[in-house]
Length: 323
Image (cartoon, rainbow, N blue to C red; front, top):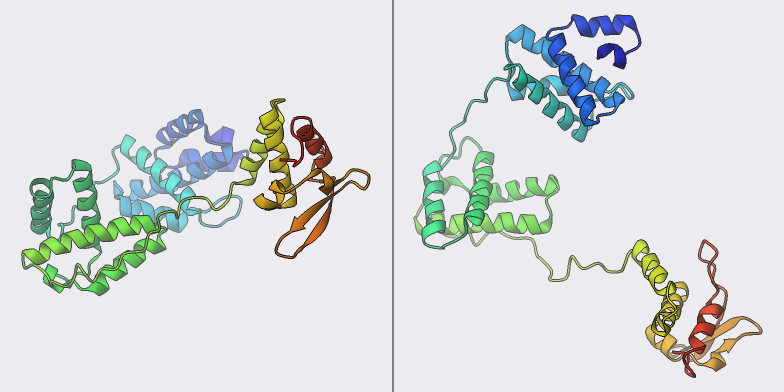
C-alpha cells in the first residue's frame, strides 16, 4: 500500500521499516476502500507512523497522549502546517480505530464526578416529581455534568458556586459556536438544577434567578426573504405553463422581482401605463406624486423574455387594468 502512495523508494522503505507496518498497511487499504482520497491517505499514513512509533516506545497510548502527539508532530504535506480542526478529528478517529484494532489504546482514567449524589437526587426528582421524559432527563443530566466538570478544583460544594462560574461556563459554550437557542436550553437546565438545589439548602437561594438566558424571538428563524435559487425556481415554475393563472402570476412576479415594484404599484398598472412604441412602463409613485418611467426590456444576466411579452400574455386573458 505504501508503494502506491509514495513514489520515492526511500520514503516507502521508511514507512515499511516502522513499527506495525503490516497492520498500518491493512488499515490504509480499508480506508481507501471506504473512499478516502490519495492525498488524505498520505497524511493518514504519516499520522499512523507517528502513533506507531509512540506505541512502540511506550507499549500503549492513551487518548490524551494520542491527541497531543498528533497535534504536535503531524503536518500536512501540501502546506506544512498543522491540520485544521476537522482534519485533526479525522486523524484522531482513524488513529483511535487503528489503536483499538491492535489493542494498544489504553483506557482513560475515570475522574470522580463532582456532586454525584446531588445529581442523582435531582435526576430522581425530575423523574418522580416532575414526570419528565427520559430524553429530557438525560439531556439535562448531561448538561449539568458538563457544568460540574468545568468548575475549578477549589469548588467543593454547591454552596461555593457563584454566578461568575455559571456565566463563564455559558460564555465558553457561546465561544464554541452554540446558538442562542441551545444556550437558552442549557441555561434553563442550570436554572432548574439550582432551583432544586436551593430547595434542598445546597446552594444560595438567589443563584437560579440570577442566571440570565439569551432572549429568543418567535420568528427569528423565519427567513427575511426567499433565496435567489427559490426566486429562480418560482419564476421557472410559473413560466412553464400556459394556464391563464400562471401567466398572470409570472407577469406579476417578473414586475416585482426585476423592477422592484411594490404590490400596490403593480395592482394599479393599466394599459395607458404601457408605451409599446417607446417600450417603456410608467409607474405611478403615490408618495412622490409623480410617474417614473422604466424600460420595458429587463436584462437579468441570461437572455430572458422582455417584460413586454409577459404583459402581452396577460392582456390575452385580462382586460384593463393589467392585473
